[in-house]
Image 1 (tube, rainbow, N blue to C red):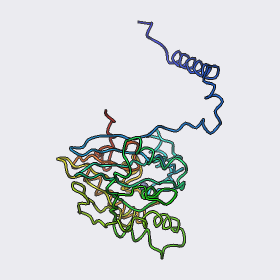
Image 2 (cartoon, rainbow, N blue to C red; image 1 turned 45 degrees about the horizontal axis):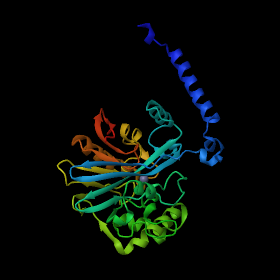
Image 3 (cartoon, helix red, strand yellow; image 1 turned 30 degrees about the horizontal axis):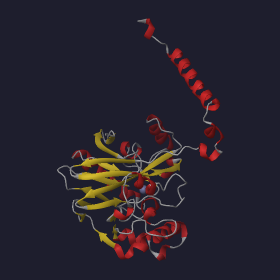
Amino acid sequence: MSTFALSRRQMLATAGAGIAGAVAARVAGPDAAFAEAPAKAAVLVNPPAFYNFKHGDVQVTLVSDGVLGLGDGRKLIKEATTEELTQRLEAAFLPADNMVLQQNIPVLKIGGKTIIVDTGTGSSTMFGDTTGRLPANLKAAGIDPASIDLIALSHCHPDHCGGMIDAGGKLVFPNAQVSVNESDFKFWTDEAQLSGEIKPFIEFARARLLPYKDKMTFHKGGQEIAPGLQAIDAPGHTVGHTMFMVTSSAKPLAITVDCAHHHILFVEKPKIEFGYDTDSKQAVATRLKVWDMLATDRIPFITYHFPWPGLGNLAKAGDAYRYYQTPVSL
Ligand SMILES: [Zn+2]
């Protein structure tokens, strides 16, 4: 039926007319407020982002703190040439010189407790103005920060502990205990390190963690930090970096946090090293163990920096891996 045999050129022409028509209607139409809005308002802000799902009897809400723009992420990666990184990113339809990471924050209702894993960057603009959305998005998800019983902190980097206090220094989670690895806490709050390149990170962590000092407990790998939630040592990214495992249901659910920062590069080439790792060789050793476990045992996992909402599975692919994002469902 020739009626349906539109050529590609015809389709483009039709689409072009449609867009042009829509723009003309917008400019000339009754939406004068839109047309006259100040330039700043023309930057469209994405709506609140949260995603609910059940894992066994555990209610999980993934809440976005917004996105982190790292610029040319190739400069932060070791043990791979720029050419190879460019090729892998472009093959995945991603810009080579503009790496954008998510901040996917799990809130778990588990064993009668409400637990948040990490807190985003908070009011800090260390990573620009596209972060710090957690409070608004928690509200949109119907989660009162005062209802959080425990902050399970994976490590003490700014994009994970930043949201513990507000711009005025008040506790964002007034009723929460904090569970963190002791070595990590000591490293990032160590007064002796208040000099050199690391100084801003130490100051940042001290300002957010010390107000919770009386409500803090230190977890160790293998320990249940709450009924059905286990801490697992995953060092390298930082000295005491911790991942978590939901163990209360028949099938586990892993929360791998910062074992990897990119869903293509650290999956297709898991031995590459990341510039923000305290010990990048140890981080690779950890990543290889974690990836092997997730793929072998087919364990679904939540990742802090992978594409929103950060839930997926990993499969072996040759001598590396492939990431399968779980489709969002109703
Ligand atoms: Zn991070």
